[in-house]
Image (cartoon, rainbow, N blue to C red; front, side):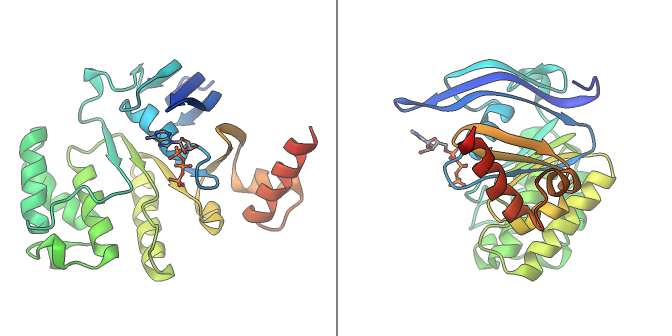
Length: 240
Ligand SMILES: Nc1ncnc2c1ncn2[C@@H]1O[C@H](COP(=O)(O)OP(=O)(O)OP(=O)(O)O)[C@@H](O)[C@H]1O
């Protein structure tokens, strides 16, 4: 595994309820990459992300983030996480939300304007979050996660429910962040988002089916697009 890996996962097993839902995953995520975590609903994407962020219970195996065990104190402020449900308050403005989270984190005041600018929310800064559109609200959650300039951003289905234009806008922001050196892990079950990533982790039923670049994925399966490639990998793993 690369010594410059931001995340290293080895033999990761997780149980939720009465079932094991991740079955011994191993992977590494290089610094500055935009990694897509793709797979059907229930395949374990959120559980893997929660394990990387360090909020998942009943975890065995190794999850190292920036050289420290996932969730450890040393990682405070270095990892940003956006869950599927909005993490900002409806009855506060975007700026008030950011000011609140900034104060909790002890991040510099200048981070508020930087996060507004990075997410293109300057014009909405003084609007109540409850009055924003779905896309603007997602960007407000992302802005909160950008406070403190985290080195690793973990985004759980940030584009779900958005129209293609808004999805495109968000992916452009992810690209800019990666170009500036941030490592991103972005989950999705929309396969056409795969081509926007540097690397793709394809999950199914709590296991990793592949860990390839989009080009490698198409070349190795002979498929025309990510969706067909994924189906081909499922066919191969079922046959095996
Ligand atoms: N709180 C919970 N208690 C018990 N089992 C759970 C819990 N949350 C998730 N699971 C189970 O863990 C497995 C993985 O779920 P997970 O949410 O990680 O999948 P996912 O790929 O993120 O799905 P989605 O795309 O729908 O969010 C599923 O079988 C799910 O039913």
